Image: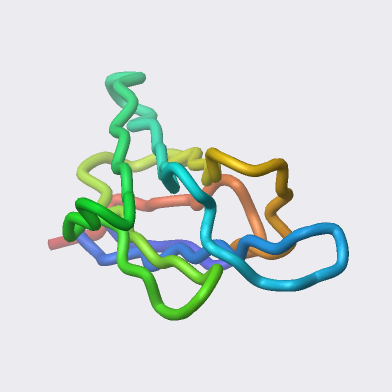
Length: 105
């Protein structure tokens, strides 16, 4: 597991597919949530085809990327959710938490 520094941009990805492995975009929305370990506050980003926003980037059909820029040390937990037609996440970054250390500067 890679360790990150406070303030470093941590890229996280998810791939959505049906049970046959065919990639597709969730019909309603894609949500990315992460939790700050120091404050226990949860931040939520949402992507929709109608209003894609800038916090979640659609890379290609069924593939999305967002990021965390940690402000405190500790384990930053995150999750991806696709809403709409029944589906499952077949791939995301390896862990559901990233360790962040305090840098010396």
